[in-house]
Image 1 (tube, rainbow, N blue to C red):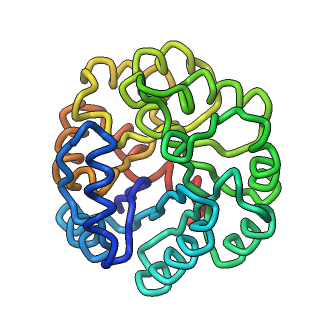
Image 2 (cartoon, rainbow, N blue to C red):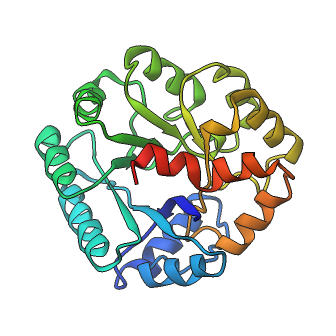
Amino acid sequence: MLIDFHAHIYPQKVAPKSTVAIGHFYDDSPIEGDGTAEGLIESGKKIGVSHYVVHSAATKASQVSVINNFIMEQCAIHPDFVGFGTMHPDFENPVEELQRIKSAGFKGIKLHPDFQQFKIDDPVMNPIYEALTSLDMVVLFHTGDYRFDFSGPARVRNLRRNFAKLKIVAAHFGGYTQWQESFDILNGVDVFFDTSSSLWKMPPELARKFISRHGSERFLFGSDFPMWTHEGELERFKQLKLTGEEEENILWKNAKDLLNL
């Protein structure tokens, strides 16, 4: 078993535009995948992925239900997909929508504070976090970016202090391009981390120190498709030369337990 905890998918008609937009947002970075569900599966097959946590971010409140419906449709077509919905700070009835997607089998939501332009620890988000806690759903955050002040490690720490029981996953080792800050600030903070979009640039010795400090039980393998191919991400992960038990924890065991698969 191998679980990809961080994968984006888009409808075929908009996938080319969406992937180009992502590349522009990240300083014209090359995008290795096509952003479609079919492309995701084709990429994941090459390393034996058994389940994919799939999601997409709503940049406007009007997109929330549309995106969530698309993810539902794709999960119905592909039984190896695990649905994560989207939410937006300006959405009118967030609790009702979270209840709806929970009933549809979604395990959590993905939020991208930098795209959506809200601070992780902004009190305006509290009703959403309260609902997620009561529904026993996971929140996966894009975290960290030196260019913005929406999703930094300190905001993740603040959120944990205010919501002790919320299931939090801080993507990109807790701080995309802010890995040293994440290493220092999130020491001892009760959150999960995913490995996506980090190992391409993060020093391997820092990644190993991260995993050693928090324990391999706190990490989840993620591709960040379509940013990267699964083959490339797994190769970078293997270069960390972790123990067999550590690799198993990160590649599937932790995700299986967190998602109740």
